[in-house]
Length: 272
Image 1 (tube, rainbow, N blue to C red):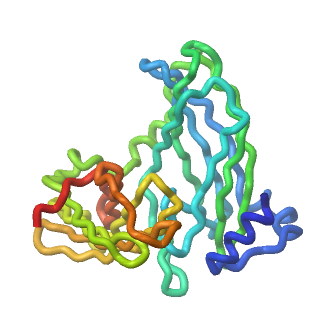
Image 2: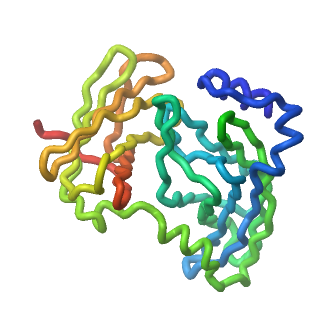
């Protein structure tokens, strides 16, 4: 696993430490634990993954930018889990050698909501998370995830709740009036231009466009604003390197500004 992850990092152009160096230093760089959380009124279980990093180190958001390493989760050996929903606190942006990445520093808690197959029964988490942690070099890390989530836990964990409260605003709360997407074919995929009628998020508005299929490469968006309208354009390259069908309801757009962040799910066809 480490060798595969190192190879992926090398392909992405990241300097990495040798496995021997990883084994010697990783415990001083990153630590992970599971916050057991509480059973909700809906019968789901809200837990949290807490990642602690040494000073000067960072890790990455779900869509890390061209200079980042995306996190990966493996729940294969878990029990009594029907579905999983992850909640991502607002990330910050990093610049290095002219490249931008998106992620977290010091500490981050990732709230995770588990829906059990058998309500009222314990949930067993047994898997791993693969993340990149970076300072002057990047280290690929695979860390185990193990915990028992008990149905009798009903008290809210303040740290998990704070992470939930730190999520980007929904489109409704952010005052988004409309979102349209114009799509045109390019030689290896599609070009998508989103037009978002919303108040400014403050300063430079970095806009990230995502699709559920993570095999599709999506370029960093070119962003401009004219009054109340924000425009963001990204190229999407499919694994087959050809145009593909796109369901606009699957498009997820995150606007990261100086003052706030906004999470937008889906867009309408652009009438223009």
